[in-house]
Length: 197
Image (cartoon, rainbow, N blue to C red; front, side):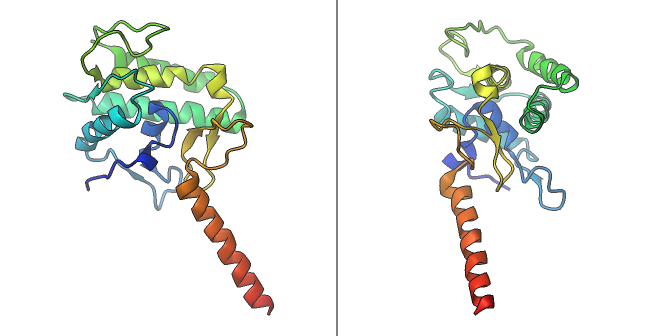
């Protein structure tokens, strides 16, 4: 199934979270599905991320070449496990940190890029390997300003960074998940009023 990589699919706030969110309805065994089940979608996602994450990537485009699915999935799963648990528990679990760091290291394997503090996605002008960019983005989540703003959307269960001024954002995307929640509340309220009448 071909996925339409729309702006909503990039509601996480960072490349690593958008990638973690490619598992839809994570935790719901009956309805959950993986948008990367077809490895061809990884390249299509990388192309879309080059557009929707242009600021984060410092204008670099992403290249998803070769057999990278294993590395991408490993980083995605380790990122989701570590940071989902950190939102729920309020701390990073050492047991989850080790596989996370190992998967990120694998994302850098074979890369000739030079990454720095001022240029986190390297100094090159050509396309950046998706798995290396994903590792950089995932590692950036450890920064205190990101850890304190990580949230789980109560509607779709996606991870996202709350960039609101007062840190009170509830949904990954107000236009999608927020509206769905409001519609559900309105329906329940209307149904209750009808039942009471």
